[in-house]
Length: 446
Image (cartoon, rainbow, N blue to C red; front, side):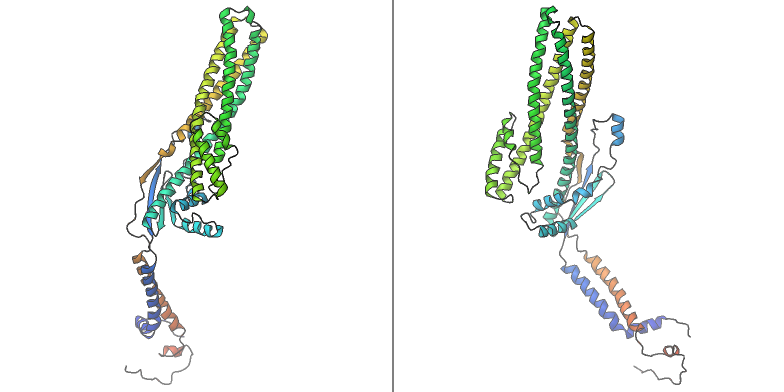
């Protein structure tokens, strides 16, 4: 059996014989790539890069060292989850006007999938990110990038604000519980002082009367705070209603009864929205406009109530201090027995716990108020630009790749054609049969 070799002359001879098998596939692939390079729709890319600064406010639940240790190193751990989430894509659809009024869920899902494929994200470390968007319309690509970055920042802020609200509400509950215990201890102390009131000087009797007056004022302020907390719960439920859901107006009508700014405006907006929603669906433009007005005023009223809460809380703390000082002054003037000393000890313990919890609540409220303006932590270092040249298709890459693929497929086609050809052209083609050669035919001169 002969040693198989394949020389350059044999290779060129094979290409000459199989030129059609080489040219046809190669020409077809080049034609397809060139056609695609010029006929594929042009897509423009716009992108933005945003830097996330370190949050300077720490968790008031923890001491300073532990809060610093527990601060997350990766502040963008949920970046892709937020950008590609369905609420974000739906918000982008509404902003771009793509399928805004589409009620067919399967078709709407296809639109969401198509839009998500146009989004590209990347992260540079743990403190910056880039969002890119491809679209056939340059201005829409620029707008989409701007909307996506705003939706991401807003979602992050909402998550942080909810966490802060949970912390504030937690401390409010604890302060309420301790206030109740502290007031019971304070009431017991006042009752004990009542037994010695007749033996006190006239000035101390006036202090005792002030104690009762402070108590009545505290009770009125606490009832107002309870009303504020109930109103905030109603407003938060309305603000968290999904875009396609109807706002529950049953309890929202009670909010204007509170004496806070924007309450009357909210009452008018709620009435208008209620009337329109009874006549039209939630997708109707006028209903959407009225709904947006209600949501806007809900936020304004909620902020006004929070501001009033802070003011009322300061008044409560001031009255608590005055009442405590009056009780201490009256007690010092009274001849306290051993039972009164036990009451004093309990009173001091609960007063200290109550004061510490109020400090924690104030820290939590400060953190919440600071984080409400934490949008400034997101700095746009590369704002989205209006693209001038299309990013897709890349004609040079497609045509160059087409030439490479055409060469490969042409050689492959020629080689396979030669491999499966059983005709005999040279003496070596006979040797594989192990038969003697008895004659040679001259090659044609052509």
